[in-house]
Structures are given as C-alpha cells and as structure tokens.
Length: 58
Image (cartoon, rainbow, N blue to C red; front, side):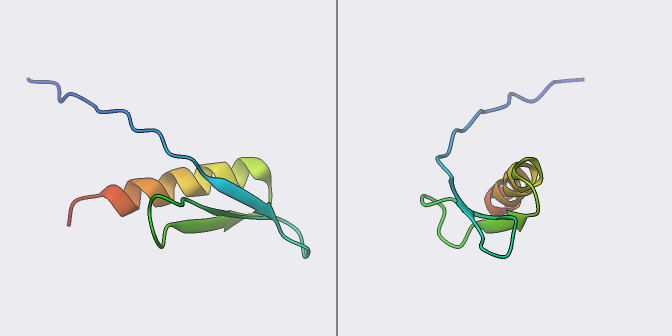
C-alpha cells in the first residue's frame, strides 16, 4: 500500500469579533472562504474545515 504525500499549506486568516457574540473569519487569499463560530476555538476548527472544502477537487 502506497502512502500519499501530503502537502502542507499555510494561509493567513482574519478573525473579527461580532457584537452579538462569537467570531467571523475569512481567508483573504481564498475569495469566498468564510466561516463563523461561538468561540475562538470553534471558529478556528470551522475555518480549517472550510479551507479543506474550498481546496477539495471538484
């Protein structure tokens, strides 16, 4: 069984604290890649998933 090589990519993300609570986050280098969450940790997890989906081959 051959193991696939993994490429590690790094992206800058912008977190914004929402007035109503929680966070909104975007990835400037990936247009339309946004997410949100109630806590910083949840938002971080959500944007990681959003980036994976954004980069997933069609």
